[in-house]
Amino acid sequence: MIFNPGVRVVEKKQLLPDLFHLKFEGESLASRAVPANFVQIKVSKGLDPIFRRPMSIHYADGKTFEMVFRTVGRGTHILSQAEIDQEFDCIGPLGNSFKLPEDGERAVMVAGGVGFPPLYFFSRFLVEKHNFPKENILFLLGMKTVSEKPMADDLLKLDIPLEFSTDDGSFGFHGFVTDLFEAHYAKKLRHEKIRIYSCGPNAMMRRLGQIALSFKVPCQLSLEGAMPCGVGTCLGCAVKMRGRNDYYRVCQEGPVFDAEEVEL
Image (cartoon, rainbow, N blue to C red):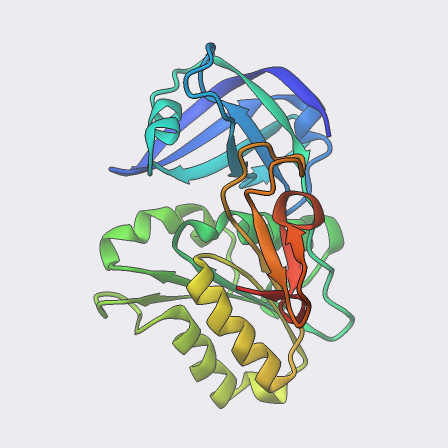
């Protein structure tokens, strides 16, 4: 964990009315970040709001790091108003990362909505750092409707197998992204050696975890949750261990867990 008191905004894009992409200059953080890591960012200079906001790292290249976020409350709204050259205080990188695919495995990324950043980062990490074949990645992204497609702009540039689902059927597969995964599994993936990676709403990952366990397929989930402190003190992000009367702290033991480890 590193305190980064002056990360500077160097690029800002508005992808949707409520979806923003920020790039920060901050080498001490960016040089250590790996997929599924997150930061705790202080969105204002004063004490209002008092708590930092946890943000997944969308990508890091050693000198800069990026985040994609939806405005859902006051803190994220303040962050969405950031200006170029504005500085923020960040703690990070925090959290663990994904296990690498084993030899011969296909990496299947299953993302729900704005859960895609850790999986985008991981896909690039596999290709750029580990020479993982692009064709051995399958990225499935679930959205509510076709109007959310701009969130996938960076994904489309990766040139990896990418498919979409929409809840209303306005683009791609009609249904949930978990249904899209099951359709792929029924047709082909059940004959391949695969490993699943996922991030998104808890209900989606709960269902995906159930599917993975029933098919006996290794599956890792990058969890999200309320993280007022981000350092394991407040227990606001606790998630129940599967089969035990105890809890993990998402910010300390996670955010990545094997599907068989947690109950969502």
